[in-house]
Length: 138
Image (tube, rainbow, N blue to C red; front, side, top):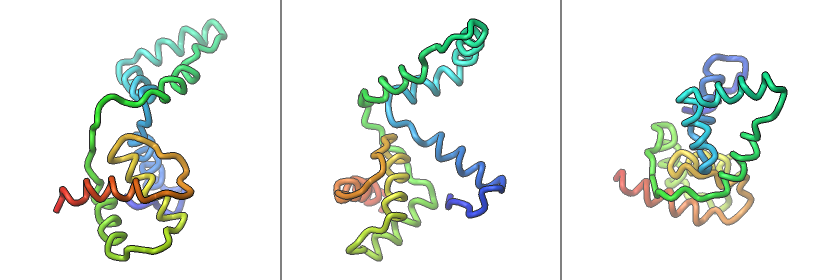
């Protein structure tokens, strides 16, 4: 799905939600998704809010996200990402723009459930990993 330009639209809000759901960067994100889905997070938040204390979930999540996920799961491209990557490969740019770097980051998050952060240089390793997945589609 391509990012809608108008941030006031329902399509933009759905796009943001889909991006956030796709961004599991570490064990902390996985734990948070499980606790939300099971209702544990809501119960914990309710109890700690009543006591006026912080449960420490944000700090715990941050620490757990430093742990690399033990599984090598490779997810699928979205249709828009697959089409974008096809065009990107055909163009084969010598210089990669900031917007291209951001899209490579989003694709990496989708495929490998790992956020590479704000990429500034050294995109070759990420491009090669994405190409391996792309070539399996062929």
